[in-house]
Picture (cartoon, rainbow, N blue to C red):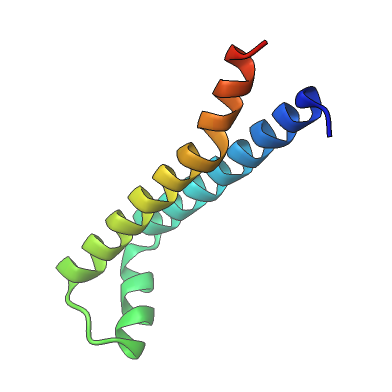
Length: 80
């Protein structure tokens, strides 16, 4: 795979992951109560714990996207 093709793949991967993050955020903001009720049936979670877990999940997902897609794409761009 050429460097140009790899750069395209990394950029598309980052974009798709950011769309997933936006959907996650939108669902969390717009359907917070429904999501909390759904998950509290399965797990004994307080609202604060539910919010903390979602915030932490978004943060870890975002850091992973940066680490595995954006940083390698930036390295490829700078190595040209």
